[in-house]
Length: 246
Image (cartoon, rainbow, N blue to C red; front, side, top):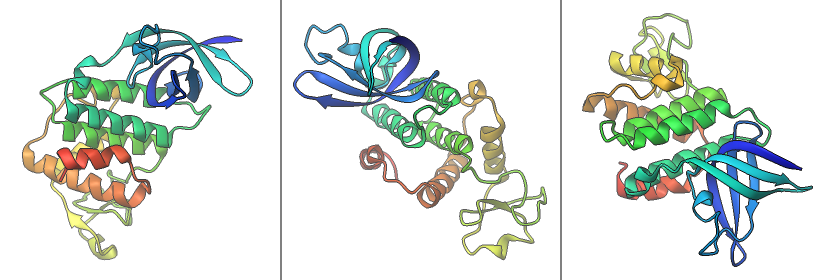
Protein backbone atom coordinates (compact mmCIF):
# COMPACT_ATOMS: atom_id res chain seq x y z
CA UNK A 1 0.00 0.00 0.00
CA UNK A 2 1.34 3.43 -0.95
CA UNK A 3 1.23 6.39 1.43
CA UNK A 4 2.44 9.99 1.15
CA UNK A 5 3.94 11.62 4.25
CA UNK A 6 5.29 15.14 4.71
CA UNK A 7 8.52 15.18 6.65
CA UNK A 8 12.23 15.83 7.01
CA UNK A 9 15.21 13.49 6.82
CA UNK A 10 16.83 13.65 10.26
CA UNK A 11 19.25 10.71 9.94
CA UNK A 12 20.90 8.81 7.10
CA UNK A 13 22.89 5.58 7.10
CA UNK A 14 24.51 3.86 4.15
CA UNK A 15 23.36 0.29 3.61
CA UNK A 16 25.10 -2.12 1.28
CA UNK A 17 26.68 -0.75 -1.89
CA UNK A 18 24.02 1.65 -3.13
CA UNK A 19 21.16 1.82 -0.61
CA UNK A 20 20.29 4.16 2.25
CA UNK A 21 18.42 3.81 5.51
CA UNK A 22 16.63 7.04 6.44
CA UNK A 23 14.96 8.25 9.59
CA UNK A 24 12.24 10.69 8.56
CA UNK A 25 10.25 12.83 10.99
CA UNK A 26 6.75 13.12 9.56
CA UNK A 27 3.59 15.06 10.31
CA UNK A 28 1.36 12.06 9.88
CA UNK A 29 3.21 9.16 11.51
CA UNK A 30 5.90 10.63 13.73
CA UNK A 31 9.36 9.14 13.30
CA UNK A 32 9.62 6.43 10.66
CA UNK A 33 12.37 4.34 9.10
CA UNK A 34 12.57 4.35 5.32
CA UNK A 35 14.79 2.29 3.00
CA UNK A 36 15.82 4.00 -0.23
CA UNK A 37 16.98 1.37 -2.70
CA UNK A 38 19.70 2.52 -5.09
CA UNK A 39 19.68 6.06 -3.65
CA UNK A 40 23.49 6.27 -3.72
CA UNK A 41 23.84 5.48 -7.40
CA UNK A 42 25.31 8.51 -9.23
CA UNK A 43 22.29 8.95 -11.50
CA UNK A 44 19.61 8.04 -8.97
CA UNK A 45 16.61 10.39 -8.81
CA UNK A 46 16.71 9.88 -5.02
CA UNK A 47 20.33 10.95 -4.54
CA UNK A 48 19.76 14.53 -3.38
CA UNK A 49 16.30 13.89 -1.96
CA UNK A 50 17.67 11.47 0.63
CA UNK A 51 20.23 13.84 2.12
CA UNK A 52 20.09 15.13 5.69
CA UNK A 53 17.71 18.10 6.19
CA UNK A 54 15.72 17.36 3.00
CA UNK A 55 12.09 18.37 3.59
CA UNK A 56 9.20 17.42 1.38
CA UNK A 57 6.56 14.84 0.47
CA UNK A 58 7.75 11.24 0.62
CA UNK A 59 5.81 8.68 -1.40
CA UNK A 60 6.32 5.34 0.32
CA UNK A 61 5.36 1.74 -0.04
CA UNK A 62 4.29 0.46 3.35
CA UNK A 63 5.67 -3.05 3.55
CA UNK A 64 5.23 -5.58 6.32
CA UNK A 65 8.30 -4.54 8.30
CA UNK A 66 9.47 -1.22 6.82
CA UNK A 67 8.75 1.59 4.40
CA UNK A 68 10.33 1.62 0.95
CA UNK A 69 10.90 4.97 -0.73
CA UNK A 70 9.34 5.37 -4.17
CA UNK A 71 9.48 9.11 -4.88
CA UNK A 72 10.18 12.43 -3.15
CA UNK A 73 8.90 15.91 -3.92
CA UNK A 74 11.35 18.19 -2.14
CA UNK A 75 10.09 21.52 -0.83
CA UNK A 76 13.22 22.67 1.00
CA UNK A 77 16.89 21.61 1.04
CA UNK A 78 18.24 24.30 3.43
CA UNK A 79 21.17 24.67 1.05
CA UNK A 80 22.66 27.70 2.82
CA UNK A 81 23.25 25.59 5.91
CA UNK A 82 25.40 23.13 3.99
CA UNK A 83 27.74 25.95 2.92
CA UNK A 84 28.92 26.56 6.50
CA UNK A 85 30.44 23.81 8.66
CA UNK A 86 29.35 25.45 11.91
CA UNK A 87 25.73 25.67 10.75
CA UNK A 88 25.87 22.03 9.61
CA UNK A 89 27.00 21.00 13.09
CA UNK A 90 24.18 22.91 14.77
CA UNK A 91 21.61 21.56 12.32
CA UNK A 92 22.91 18.01 12.78
CA UNK A 93 22.51 18.40 16.54
CA UNK A 94 18.91 19.56 16.11
CA UNK A 95 18.16 16.48 14.01
CA UNK A 96 19.94 14.18 16.45
CA UNK A 97 18.00 15.72 19.33
CA UNK A 98 14.71 15.19 17.49
CA UNK A 99 15.67 11.61 16.67
CA UNK A 100 16.41 10.96 20.35
CA UNK A 101 13.16 12.44 21.67
CA UNK A 102 10.61 11.43 19.02
CA UNK A 103 8.99 8.02 18.86
CA UNK A 104 7.26 6.14 16.04
CA UNK A 105 3.57 7.04 15.89
CA UNK A 106 4.06 10.04 18.17
CA UNK A 107 2.42 13.33 17.23
CA UNK A 108 5.49 15.23 16.04
CA UNK A 109 3.91 18.10 14.10
CA UNK A 110 5.18 20.79 16.43
CA UNK A 111 8.67 19.33 16.57
CA UNK A 112 8.79 19.13 12.77
CA UNK A 113 7.73 22.78 12.60
CA UNK A 114 10.33 23.69 15.22
CA UNK A 115 13.02 21.96 13.17
CA UNK A 116 12.02 23.92 10.09
CA UNK A 117 12.00 27.28 11.85
CA UNK A 118 15.29 26.47 13.59
CA UNK A 119 17.08 25.52 10.37
CA UNK A 120 15.79 28.70 8.76
CA UNK A 121 17.16 30.65 11.72
CA UNK A 122 20.58 29.08 11.16
CA UNK A 123 20.49 30.50 7.65
CA UNK A 124 19.87 33.99 9.06
CA UNK A 125 23.23 35.65 9.65
CA UNK A 126 21.63 38.24 11.95
CA UNK A 127 20.89 35.64 14.65
CA UNK A 128 23.68 34.12 16.73
CA UNK A 129 23.75 30.34 16.28
CA UNK A 130 24.22 29.90 20.02
CA UNK A 131 20.89 31.64 20.59
CA UNK A 132 19.22 29.41 18.00
CA UNK A 133 20.56 26.37 19.87
CA UNK A 134 19.30 27.61 23.25
CA UNK A 135 15.85 28.36 21.85
CA UNK A 136 15.64 24.99 20.12
CA UNK A 137 16.73 23.10 23.25
CA UNK A 138 14.28 24.88 25.54
CA UNK A 139 11.36 24.45 23.17
CA UNK A 140 12.18 20.76 22.73
CA UNK A 141 12.28 20.39 26.52
CA UNK A 142 8.90 22.11 26.63
CA UNK A 143 7.41 19.67 24.13
CA UNK A 144 8.84 16.71 26.04
CA UNK A 145 7.65 17.96 29.43
CA UNK A 146 11.20 18.31 30.78
CA UNK A 147 11.32 22.10 30.80
CA UNK A 148 12.04 24.14 33.96
CA UNK A 149 9.58 26.29 35.86
CA UNK A 150 10.41 29.87 34.90
CA UNK A 151 7.23 31.79 35.78
CA UNK A 152 7.22 31.35 39.56
CA UNK A 153 9.30 29.98 42.42
CA UNK A 154 9.40 26.18 42.35
CA UNK A 155 9.08 26.07 46.16
CA UNK A 156 6.58 28.76 47.14
CA UNK A 157 5.10 29.89 43.78
CA UNK A 158 6.02 33.56 44.29
CA UNK A 159 6.27 35.53 41.06
CA UNK A 160 9.29 37.57 42.21
CA UNK A 161 12.08 35.26 41.03
CA UNK A 162 15.77 35.85 40.40
CA UNK A 163 17.61 32.56 41.11
CA UNK A 164 17.81 29.44 38.99
CA UNK A 165 18.41 25.87 40.16
CA UNK A 166 19.15 22.96 37.84
CA UNK A 167 18.48 20.51 40.68
CA UNK A 168 15.21 22.23 41.49
CA UNK A 169 13.98 22.33 37.89
CA UNK A 170 13.61 26.08 37.71
CA UNK A 171 13.41 29.48 39.32
CA UNK A 172 13.58 30.43 42.98
CA UNK A 173 12.74 33.59 44.90
CA UNK A 174 15.08 35.33 47.34
CA UNK A 175 13.50 33.53 50.30
CA UNK A 176 13.91 30.07 48.76
CA UNK A 177 17.25 30.48 47.01
CA UNK A 178 19.06 28.37 49.62
CA UNK A 179 16.72 25.40 49.21
CA UNK A 180 19.07 24.06 46.53
CA UNK A 181 22.85 24.20 46.77
CA UNK A 182 23.34 24.88 43.07
CA UNK A 183 21.11 27.97 42.80
CA UNK A 184 22.60 31.02 41.12
CA UNK A 185 21.28 34.50 40.39
CA UNK A 186 20.40 35.38 36.81
CA UNK A 187 19.60 38.61 35.06
CA UNK A 188 15.90 39.60 34.82
CA UNK A 189 16.33 39.79 31.03
CA UNK A 190 17.44 36.15 31.02
CA UNK A 191 14.35 35.22 33.04
CA UNK A 192 12.12 37.04 30.57
CA UNK A 193 13.92 35.33 27.66
CA UNK A 194 13.20 31.89 29.13
CA UNK A 195 9.56 32.84 29.65
CA UNK A 196 9.29 34.14 26.10
CA UNK A 197 10.76 30.96 24.58
CA UNK A 198 8.39 28.69 26.47
CA UNK A 199 5.23 30.73 25.91
CA UNK A 200 5.74 31.97 22.34
CA UNK A 201 4.30 30.51 19.17
CA UNK A 202 6.82 28.72 16.98
CA UNK A 203 6.68 31.36 14.25
CA UNK A 204 7.73 34.04 16.76
CA UNK A 205 10.67 32.22 18.36
CA UNK A 206 13.47 33.68 16.28
CA UNK A 207 12.43 37.30 16.15
CA UNK A 208 14.83 38.68 18.73
CA UNK A 209 18.50 38.92 19.62
CA UNK A 210 20.32 39.25 22.93
CA UNK A 211 23.26 41.32 24.04
CA UNK A 212 26.39 39.29 24.67
CA UNK A 213 26.26 39.08 28.49
CA UNK A 214 22.66 37.84 28.45
CA UNK A 215 23.37 35.32 25.71
CA UNK A 216 26.45 34.06 27.58
CA UNK A 217 24.31 33.57 30.70
CA UNK A 218 21.59 31.78 28.75
CA UNK A 219 24.16 29.48 27.12
CA UNK A 220 25.66 28.70 30.54
CA UNK A 221 22.24 27.96 32.04
CA UNK A 222 21.11 25.73 29.18
CA UNK A 223 24.38 23.81 29.13
CA UNK A 224 24.05 22.99 32.84
CA UNK A 225 20.36 22.13 32.55
CA UNK A 226 20.81 19.92 29.51
CA UNK A 227 23.79 18.05 30.95
CA UNK A 228 21.84 17.20 34.10
CA UNK A 229 18.34 16.51 32.78
CA UNK A 230 19.03 15.05 29.33
CA UNK A 231 21.06 11.91 29.93
CA UNK A 232 22.38 11.35 26.43
CA UNK A 233 25.63 11.93 24.58
CA UNK A 234 24.91 13.69 21.28
CA UNK A 235 27.76 12.95 18.89
CA UNK A 236 27.15 16.11 16.88
CA UNK A 237 27.88 18.17 20.00
CA UNK A 238 31.37 16.70 20.21
CA UNK A 239 32.18 18.08 16.78
CA UNK A 240 30.44 21.34 17.57
CA UNK A 241 32.38 21.74 20.80
CA UNK A 242 35.66 21.43 18.93
CA UNK A 243 34.57 24.20 16.58
CA UNK A 244 32.75 26.82 18.58
CA UNK A 245 31.28 25.87 21.94
CA UNK A 246 33.04 26.65 25.19
